[in-house]
Length: 349
Image (cartoon, rainbow, N blue to C red; front, top):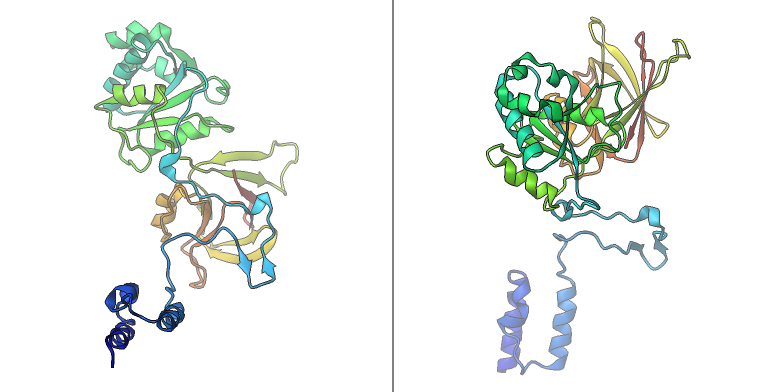
């Protein structure tokens, strides 16, 4: 056996173990052309079956079948770190929301408000209840800037197109309340962790000057979060009442309340019947709400950048229905046969 044949035999023997080193094992320049062709044919039978890369954007099935190219079918998954804040104009107004009934939040609140007004010349909005807080009225530092603050009342004053960004001082509940105030577009929210939970409040208040300055100068990353549009249709009640239409950040919960009986809930997805839930209730949550009530009921956590809706039963009577994840663009219809909420529609905003 000549030297070239010996090298090729050794290469074939080790190919199943060192697939990616085939050309470096024993294939030299003295290998014949026929030997190289056979080696390439052999390589085609050892293609990897797994890949760390995303699927090919060109979807083709055999020589004839393929996906029709339309703009509606193009899905782009963006890197969350690449989403940056950009101001078309210099921000002028800021809404500061603090955690209620918490004495520990008052000193940071006063320090932040004074700094925004005196150092940054911002127009600061606060809740009307803050202006009448007796604990703040006795603080000399707050009284210096009290007359320069703008107040609003929830349900009476419209903040749409008045606020450039929001600063929250508290926990996750404070941020959820800030989201509820804006039933259309929500300004960017900068949340400082001064509460009991911190899933949505990643910033520390120790260096708030630098954090706020980064936002004002547009040097900040954004995490976009989806909300659910909840439409309640009370079919058995007075039709003159306005239809309930809310945008929620965490979840929509349908439960049996104080009733000792199990609730019967019919679930439809885009008009098609899915299942009937018999149990204590049902949780329809966003990826943001997947870390709240849903995970306590046995669901999984979903990254906020994943476009999805999670449906989780609460203590179901049947073991066949487990938490499910559906695409974000679907419409969920819930028929709840218990007194006041016979029909509920949930859409992703």
